[in-house]
Image 1 (tube, rainbow, N blue to C red):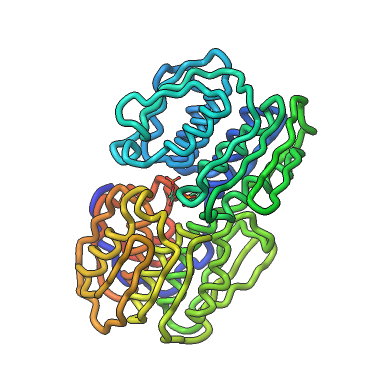
Image 2: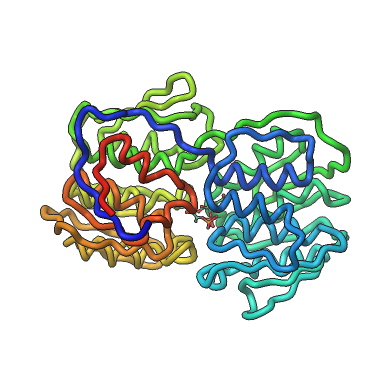
Length: 408
Ligand SMILES: O=C(O)C1=C[C@@H](OP(=O)(O)O)[C@@H](O)[C@H](O)C1
Ligand SMILES: C=C(OP(=O)(O)O)C(=O)O
């Protein structure tokens, strides 16, 4: 699928959507299952990133290409560093070669790992010679990407003496670190997070065999929060399978979208989103704990003609694309006015939205999905629409099912 044109939704369509498993939970659990085969997993994400992770973990190839998958790149760096005797080059897409990995590599090297850069210092591809790591104490800078922290925590229980990790500076994307610790605890690994120190106890034995069911992806749910927010009063959509006590930080959507008049009701494994009121006040959110929903929220505000101030966005520049620049460029094509710094975005309230603007997606699934709900206001064109498969392969089918008209 390449360029598609999206149109306003039809009435009398299906309003229930089953969303695939969380990509973040899946990629953690897939790695943990490789370390502890006694684990059984259910509702694993069907995303490209999780498929790449699954394949990489059993690959016998000398070179593993993880394309655009950031978590796979970071988690597998730690995984292969402790596979004694295994030599592998981990590489990725052109963009992956621009996404920094030095903080993680230096932490692993400090613990005793043998990792070298193949092209540019500090960036993939990297050559890893797996070995037994000798040390168990390390410090790392915590404000660039939480994925470095999670990567170390995921292998920690397999180190002879576990791990004591000291986090330097502000910690970014904290819920993702807590998700990692939550999953470790769930499978029976002991962890402690006190102040800026995280410790994980060693565990050389097999775990109690158990089945873990991955909750569906809350970042994917964000596009439906946006659709409902932009829709008429009374509009509702039911999504499954979700739970109240989520490990995913993006479940903050429930509170955030109250500000847009969207009410969320938890049912048996489901959430029902309903538009109950209109609220046009300027929105201010700090998204340091939920960076992946920044694009969704910015576009919701633009569609509704509401101004917003989004902060805590310092990680957006090193994701699939520079998301701050991409948002500004595309919203301005549509007639909006956006000001960005390297960690914030300000959108002015606007009245008009230009029709049939062709939205560039920059190899970023979230650019395609975040702009899609705008079709409720004006017909819109999405370039390289297939990018959604990075996290949500059936996104366009699901939009059609709830009534969007899609032409190729
Ligand atoms: O650990 C994870 O699963 C993730 C952590 C976040 O990255 P940063 O910690 O780099 O912000 C998030 O943006 C990404 O989509 C998934
Ligand atoms: C940033 C993301 O993914 P990753 O860092 O794993 O490529 C994302 O899914 O929005």
